[in-house]
Length: 112
Image (cartoon, rainbow, N blue to C red; front, side):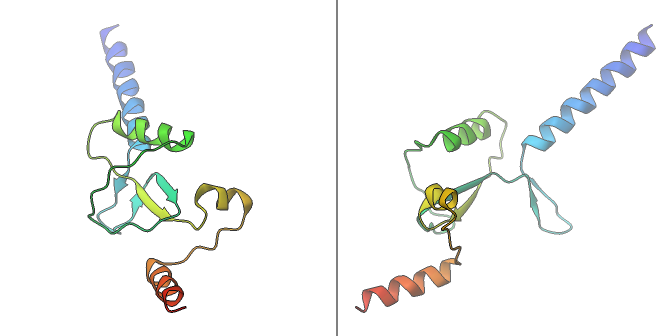
């Protein structure tokens, strides 16, 4: 009947909306936490708000950015500084530092 089709359609729309919500990054305004945020792990530090044009050549990141950009705005991703980039993560040699620690280390290296 029409009522059953409407309920089935509503259920399908809810499932599709839930799948879309799982794909997109979402800010929880009560906690300030960003959920489902894709992370781009690279071996350099970026300054927030800076514009940069980059060549994304690693397959996992090409896929990640294509997925992000194929969905409606807003488009968000996180930038995670990892010494050695993805290779450092794969080798297990990645020692994560804050950007402040990285700047201090680089400043100390310049003194030599």
